[in-house]
Length: 424
Image 1: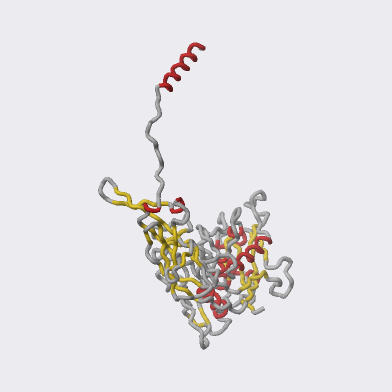
Image 2: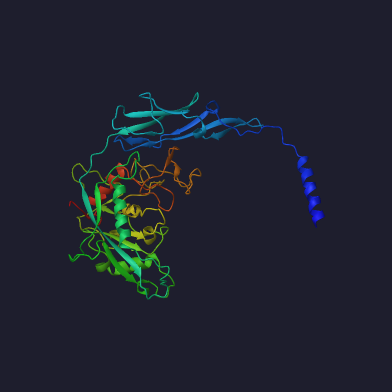
C-alpha cells in the first residue's frame, strides 16, 4: 500500500511539473465613459408638485453598441455606477443646472422643467415634466373605525391552538397608524403625493353610546353557524357576507357614524365583494360630478345597508404581513371611498378616474409582477409606490396623489353610505 501511495505521489508531481501557465493576460472588460453611445432617461412622471417633498427619482440606463459577426449591431447594457465618479450628469435644461439623480423644488420658475442625461459625449433625449402648485390642505376630517373581527370558535374541530393566530389589538392600532401616515403624505415622496388631511381613529363607543373595552374592535366568534351550506367542509367569503347581511343589526354599525371594516378569514387573492359608490348627492354650485358615480341620490339616507354597500372587506391575512412588513390596509379602505388600482382599464377615464396617477399595463411583457419597477402606459419607467397598488405584488404602497385625495374626499362627503366623516 505504501509503495502504491508513493507511486501516485510521484505521478502527480510529474503531472504538475508538466503544466505551464497560459502566457495570455486575461482581463475583464471595463467600460469607459467613451464606450457609451446610447442613454435612456426616465423622469418617472409627467408632472410634479412643487412642494419640496415631491421628488423625481431618475432612472438612467446606459448602453454601448456591439458589432456582431453577422453584421448586425446590438446594444449592450453598461452599469454607469461602475464608471468613474462624475461620469453621469443630469441637467435641467431651462436653468442649466446639474441636478443629480433626484430633483425637487419649492418654486415654479417655469411651467415645465426639462431634463437630459449625459455620459461622455452622449446625451439622452430630453424629458419634460410639468410643475404644479402645492394644493391647499383641505379641512381636517375624522372617521371613526370599527373592526368587526371574525375569530374561529375554539371548540370548532378545525381549531388548532398551536397554529391559530387571533388578531391582536396592537395590530389594529398599527394598521390605523400606518394608514394615516400614508394618506397624509408622511411616508413617501411621490411626484404628485398629497395629504388627504383625514384622521382615521378607532371608535371609542358602540352604537348604544357605551364605551368599548378596546376601542375600535367588535369581536365576533364564528363556527359552522355562518356557513350557507352546513355540510361544506370549509368557510368562504360568501358565507360571511350572507351571515352579515342576515344579522345587520349587530354586524353593521350605523354607516353614517362608523367605517365598518369586516376582518374576514380570507387571503388577499380573493374578491371581497365590496361595491363601488353607486350614487352621489345633487351637485351644489361649484361642485364637479364624481366620475363613475352615475346615479343621483335623493338624500343622505338613500343607500342600502348591507355588506357590499356599507362595509370594507379586509382579508385577515393583511394583518399578518410577515417579518419587517408594514400592515397595509388602505387599498381596501380606498376602494370603499371610490379609488381604483392604478393599472390599465379601458372601462374608466384615465383607467382610475385620476389623471395624476402612474399606471401600467399588466399584459405588457415588459412588466413583471415580481418587481416594483414598471413601464408606464407612456413607455416610461417608474417605481410603483401608490397605496392603491395591488398589495400582493412588490410596490412601495406609501402615497396617494392629489387627484386621489380629491376623489376620496368627494365620495366621503357626497356619496350616501360612505358619508361617515366628522369635523371633530
